[in-house]
Length: 607
Ligand SMILES: Nc1nc2c(ncn2[C@@H]2O[C@H](COP(=O)(O)OP(=O)(O)OP(=O)(O)O)[C@@H](O)[C@H]2O)c(=O)[nH]1
Image (cartoon, rainbow, N blue to C red; front, side):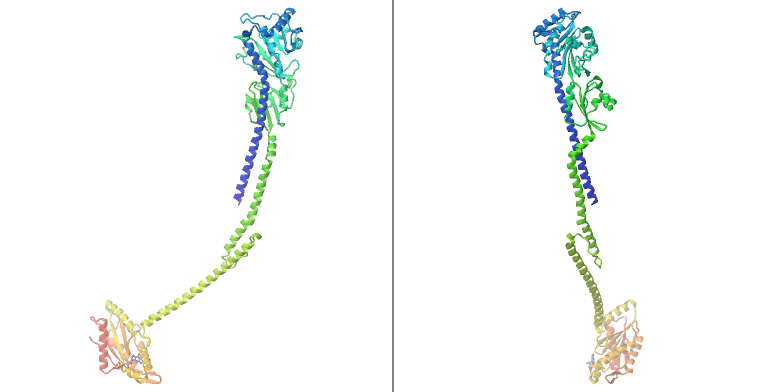
C-alpha cells in the first residue's frame, strides 16, 4: 500500500516536473523566437544602408570605365562655375539657384586646387563626386533613417554630400573648408577606418555610434573605401540614424525584461527602456552587464545563457554585427509557466488528492476488512469462535454469511473429531474383544469343551513339539495313557450327566497330581493322555500312581450319588527308536496289560 502510494506520488511528481520543464522550454523558445524576429526585422531595415553603400562603391570603383558620365553635365557646369567664382581657394554649391531639380542633389565643397583630370585614370575625383551626387540623390527616399550619403576624396580636397545642406550647416564650428576637410580625415571614424593601412581588405565597415553634429541624433556610419585599381580614391559612406532602433524595440511583444541592441564596439545603441540623446548616454555593454567583462568576447558568450536571475536571449545581425539582447527575468518565466501550467498543476493536485482519497477508501472498504476477515478465518480454528470482524455495512451480509459458514464448519469439525474419538474407542474395544475371542477360539480349538483338558488334535501338536525338542536336547519324555475303568457302567447306572461330571472331576484331580509343565489331553471318550516332558519312566510311574490313587481314594459325589471310579494307566518313556506314534502305541499296550491285569493299576511298558 505504502509502496503503491509512493510510486503513484513519484509518477505524479515526475509528470509535473516534466510538464513544468516543457512549459519553461516553450516560454524560452517563444522569447528566443521574438528576439530572432526582431533581429531579422532590423537586418531588413538596415539593408537599405548596405545596398546604398555597396551600389555606390560598385559604381565608384568602376567609374573610369563609365566616364564621361553624361547624366551630371548640368551639375558639372554648375561646379565649374562655382570653382571659377570661388574666392580664397575653396568652392561650394551654395550658389546653385540655376540647378535643375536642386532638391534632389546635394552639397559639394572642395578646394579650387582639386584636380580636374587624373592623369593615370583619365577622370578626376571631382567627376566621381559629381556622378555620385547625381546617383545617390534619391537614396534617402528608400529609407527614412538614412541621413547623409557622402563621398570624401582621399586627396582631402573634396566632400560630396546628399541631401542638400548648406556649407555653413556642414562646417559647423570649423573655421574654414581646408581645415574641415583635413580634420575630417583625422577625426572621423569612417575616413580613418577606410585608409589602406587600416583596411587592407578594402571591406565595407560600420563605425562606432556617434552623435550627429547637426543634431539629427545618434547615428552610425556605414562606409567602404573606393579604389581605382591600386589607387585609393576615397570613401563612400551613409549615416544611419538610430532612432528607428528604439521604435523597433518598443514594439517588441514581450513587455518584461531588458531589451537592447549593441554593436561590435561594446556600445549599447538602443534600449527599450531609455532613449539615447547624447554621446554620454551611450553606455558600454560590458558596463551594463558586468559579467561580460570577464570574457574576451562577451557578446558571443551570451547565447541562451542564464545571467544571474535573468535568462539571456541573443541574436546577432550579420551586417552590421549588431546584437539583439533580451534579458528576461527568471521569475517572469516562472510566472508565465505557472499561468500556463496551472491547469495541469491543478489536475495533478486533483489526481494526487483523489489518489490519496481512493487509497484511503480502498484501504477502509476493502483491504482492512479483508485483513480482519482473514484474521477471523485464522481464529476459527479455536474452539470458541471470535466475535465477527468490524466491516463496512456493504460487507456485513457477506461477512455474516461467511461467519455462519465458518461456525458451522467448526461445529462439523468438532462433531467429526468427537465421532472419530468414539470410533477409535470402539475400535479399541472391539479389537480387545476380538483378541479375547481369538484367544478363546484358540483355546477352544485346542481344548476339550467338556473337561477343559487339551483335545486330541492339540495333543499331537504338543507331542510333535516335545518329541522334536527331546530329540534335539536328548531330554526324556514320558506319556501316561489313562482309561477310566468300566465307565460305561457309570453312564448306565447314573446317567450321562453323571458320566460327564466324572470326566470333569477326573481332569481336575489329574491337574492336581501333575506338574504345571505336564499336559493333560483327552485322547477320546474316557481315555486321557498326560504328556510328561523331562520325565523318566520311574518318575512317570510315580506320577501315574499318585494320580491313580487320587482318583481311587475318593469317590465322586454327583446328584446325591457316590460314584467310585478307578483308572488304568499305561506308562511309556520315549526310547531312542521311538516315533511319536510308537510311543503312544507302547503306552496303549501297557494300558491294555493294566486292564487285563485287573484294572486300577499302572503298568510301565518296559520296551
Ligand atoms: N457320560 C459319558 N460317557 C461317555 C463319554 N465318552 C464315552 N462314554 C462312554 O464310555 C463308555 C465306554 O465303555 P467301554 O468302551 O465299554 O469301556 P468300559 O465300560 O470303561 O470298560 P473298560 O474300559 O473295559 O473298563 C461307553 O458307554 C461310552 O458311551 C462321555 O463323554 N460322557
